[in-house]
Each structure stands twice: as C-alpha cells, then as structure tokens.
Amino acid sequence: MERTFVMLKPDAIKKDVAGEVISRLEKAGLEIIGMKMIKLDEKICREHYAHHVDKPFFKGLVEFMCSTPVICMVLEGENAVEVVRSLAGPTDSKKAPKGTIRGDFGTDVQANIIHASDSRETAESEIKRFFKKSELFSQ
Ligand code: IDP
Ligand code: MG
Image (tube, rainbow, N blue to C red; front, side, top):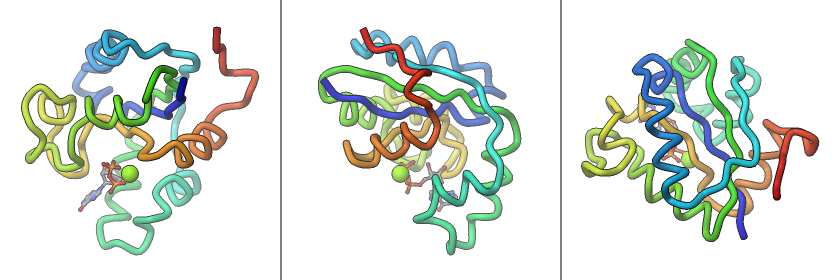
C-alpha cells in the first residue's frame, strides 16, 4: 500500500471538472483517505514549487495557484504514486494524450488541472505539508 498527495488546481475548480477527476481516481481503485479545500498563498507555493522558484514563470504560477481555493487529497492504493502520475499524464496539457486527465481537461503547461506527487519520498513530505495526522482516515 502506498500513499500519494493530489491537488486539484484552480483550473479544475473554474472548469467544474473536480468531480470528474475525483471519479477517475476512485475508479482506478484509489481510496480517498483525506480531502479538504484550502486557499494557497505565496509562502506555501514557494515550498511546494521550490524547484521552480527561480524560473521566469514562477510569479505567474503563484498567481494561478492562488486564484481560487484548491482541493487537496491524500489517496491510498497499490502503486498510488505511479498510478496517479500516469492517470494525470505529462505536465504540458497540450502534449498530454487524450484519455489522461491533463489531456482531456487541461489547457497548457501551467493550467494542467492536477498536481500529483512524483515519488514516494515527495508524497510523504507533501502529505505532511498539507495534512495533519488527525485529518487522515486510513481504514
Ligand atoms: P508536474 O506537475 O508534472 O510534476 P513540475 O515540473 O513539477 O510538473 O511543475 C510543477 C507545476 O509547475 C506544473 O504542473 C505546472 O503547473 C507548472 N509549470 C511547470 N513548467 C511550467 C512552465 O514552463 N510554464 C508555466 N508553468 C509551468
Ligand atoms: Mg512535479
């Protein structure tokens, strides 16, 4: 059993596709063990996207990520990290194949609907960043 962290980004909220995305994740056999809506701020974006802080697109990325609340989730299942990354598809929605979440619902490289942890280690630190232990309900 593995856990992964997922965030439905502001474009998922604005396009009213959060439910459809959650449904795809559930149909893939993943259990939702934590879920909440929060508003990001620049500080948490700097932590969560530390690998992009020096990029020219970072300011725009922060504006986008803070433009509406986001839905944060912790999912549990076999190979959860890899399963969600493959359901999400590649970062650039324009290059993401149809049938992937980003390919079907995303707009471009920034507005790509979903964040998903990229490794078991990242998942662990992202879950800690966004959830208290008491907010997780593993069966
Ligand atoms: P990932 O979300 O597929 O793991 P990362 O490279 O970790 O991709 O980038 C994190 C997020 O930063 C992306 O999902 C996207 O929203 C944003 N991003 C990445 N590259 C660009 C870019 O070139 N322009 C604008 N936003 C970008
Ligand atoms: Mg990433």
